[in-house]
Length: 382
Image (tube, rainbow, N blue to C red; front, side, top):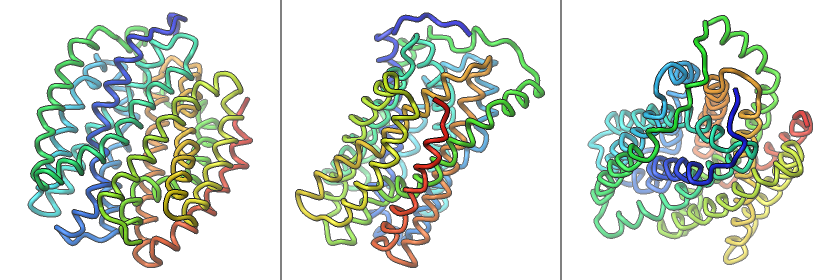
């Protein structure tokens, strides 16, 4: 597939903004967990189950990828911010656990339809600088996960749990704006019709690479889940306020924005594998330092941890989107499915360990587990 070699900054920025508008709503769940535990009496295991439910639709990502190659998939990117906004803004006022699960599931379906075609769209407008393009893309998501906790907790502080529903019009407005700005960016015009056997052949060719990526993800995922999904609960169990816990999550995600931006760009210069090796060693070292510090030093270490924790995201996306294939949507969907499934399993495991061993002990276990990703980072092709 041939693409314009020029880095199209205006279109790159638009897709980054789209990613931000979508993911800012999915970032509501983690900071709301302590409040939902009080309001609905949910356990850490159930909290982990909610994350699994949100990621469950990723099982069908390969089919979403096939669909994206046969339709005007840019409309998936356009409409999903509104759908996710409605679902996640209603989570705090869900009348019972079943409704809560259904709302989270809806947000997961919407998320799948956004995240499968959007990186392919980004690659198309990044020209020869795919790493930088994926850094921009990931920055949109990480900025959202930094702004989301602050926004949702601010709404709760001002108006109570019902105040979160006030974010619904913003999501609808975002999709409206994206319709007028992204409707002319096609990501399927170069893709020819393919049979099931061709997709199977593509998967077999892609398998050695995705298996190496999956092993790195597997060993890092528990640590990442502990820091991103359970950080507010971890800090409140240590005696910190809900507000401080939410702000700490925002700080972590904010540091992730910086790490994400520079990691993809750096990988264009020093290589994808070298960047992965640095991130795989640095993240668990800083994670251990974080759980053994307090006060201002702990916040400083949290910032440094965020730089390394999120650095692998744009690098993996660049590796996958550098892969030579006629079926970029399908290959990207396989990667997304792998990423989200491993993350869903590990977030559930961390929740179970937290209930039975305490989060303090769990954090120490997952930090050690993350070091096992280092040998597999060396196996990524140069």
